[in-house]
Amino acid sequence: QPTLLQRRVRPSISWLHCVLLVVTELIAQQEKSAESTYLEGMSKTLGDRYRLDTLLGGGGMGEVWQAHDELLDREVAVKVIRPHLADDESIRERLRTEAQLAGSLHHQNIVDVYDYGEHHEDDGRTTPYLVMPLVDGVSLSAMLKSRVALPVGETMSIIGEMANALDAAHEAGIVHRD
Image 1 (cartoon, rainbow, N blue to C red):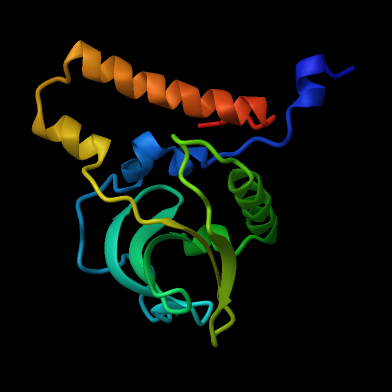
Image 2: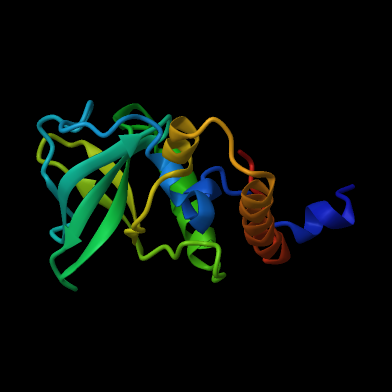
């Protein structure tokens, strides 16, 4: 018999951290690089709309690119999922569901999700991607690398913003799994 909390909570989001405004740039966990490690041979325009321009960083799920939205003529961030994950239809379905849930959240500390798509290459590969606003600024990881420690007040402010974002997600019935 599920508990009241289990009945109330919708499926959890494994990459909600991508939409937390205060940690948006955490997706750039590696140093900026001029080349993708796994998009070789892939189209540099996804969905006939998003032109991948500059690799911002990468992590376990994929890479994040600064891109240009050709339709709306604006700069965006595009997270491209790693091929070994993209090959699994059940993972793609989970990502679609998570993108829908993340896209339903609207909070000052949560970055909006503009779009989710699956780009189909001529060789049969499918590349799932998530489109978000491009947030200008320094990543938390870069800030921590450049300083010995953050002052207590600044640390508490960051934690407070993250807690507010997580609270908004929880109020919407979404649980962050990371």
